[in-house]
Length: 281
Image (cartoon, rainbow, N blue to C red; front, side, top):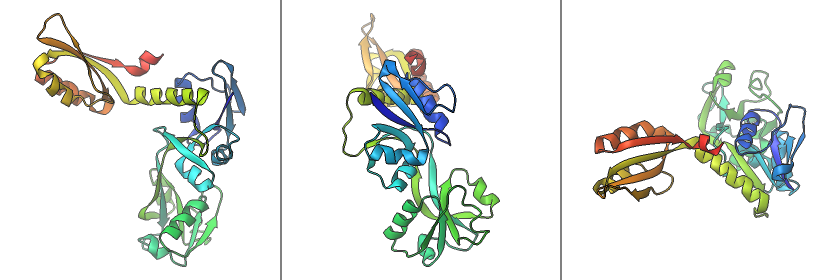
């Protein structure tokens, strides 16, 4: 049976559970469940602390896991990224009081408070900077006020929490993170693992694309296809009228309105848009 780690709480938990549900897997009935067995799909889901997931997966104890790129890299485990899941986007940045520093080079000899000591040490080493890393669990925004550190390094989403603490980001981002499906570095995926990956890829496609069908003059097919750059090449089928063809293509949701306007201007008829997510149900 496939063994998969899922965040039990935190920013990634709800989105991970929702994505697995969309992929056709059983979820937990309440937050106290630590293990859920989906016998129909031959999968066991283990609800673990997000910071621990990469350790379990990297050791091979579990086959797959959902966690953040920042947490995976900070763990130093042998887990590797297999699939980007499209949620949980964040940026890992240095922050301090205005004027304290403008780049990582200014951190020489400073104290840096963080919950991601592995990431910070790796970045300092990469930039040839010698600084003291103060590891803290949980919120680190008050470390400067309390005199524990000169600056902090933390995950930044909107920046509101930092501004409320009188801090501002500086320098280049240390890391851009998002939710990932991870696997052991020495293990190829097959069987139920490959099935789970394929289903998650289907969810991602359904979330980002719609199916578009339209009729157009056969002579304009290439020009129309250039307006609808989907995830795959369009399917072109003949119609009863030899001068007309039917075109089917997946179009990204962000460009849908623009594409429809341009197709109508080109002379397309009978444009039909279908939600792929609904088709999966």
